[in-house]
Length: 221
Image (cartoon, rainbow, N blue to C red; front, side, top):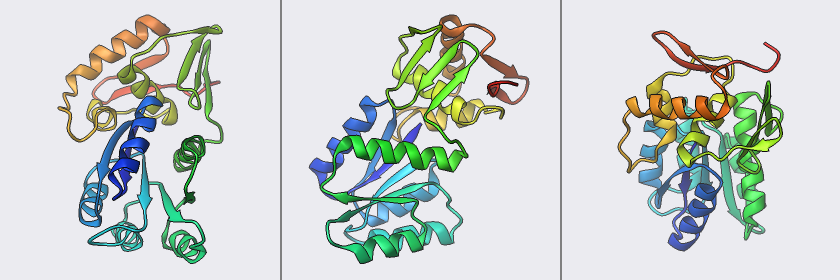
């Protein structure tokens, strides 16, 4: 899962990005409105954390442009305490949720998981596929109740397929959501990570859809 963090306070942006990376996300950072507008329009993010007080172009204007251009990526806006009018304007402009500064990183993660779930039409952060359980809150995977150690890339692929269970996902789409902007994206490496997941989780979990990519079947299918 890939997140864009838009925040002009460099220290806070790094703290948020590091918290998200530790939770299994690939993260890009934009420090101003111009970069945010371009990055949010050109890359397929799973969610965007957007500060409204940005240089160059304010966050509210960026959000409105995204929505006018048909960008439907879930957006969690950050606002200063007491600026209730910004929260109202942000929601009216198309934001999916808001968080007031200063905030606890645990709440940021919880709200981010929620907007991603809603964007995918999912009700829970807990997924079960036969004997495999995925807890997105803890970025933890178990098989028959036993913890399964996964690398960050393996977990991101599994989490993305779980959020889109039942749909064939191409290798290129997985690569776009696996790596941050500054990383080389080689869709051929996806096959390697999927092979590793199959060895760890069983070969029946992820099916190959010939000519399309990979699919995780929904529970009960």
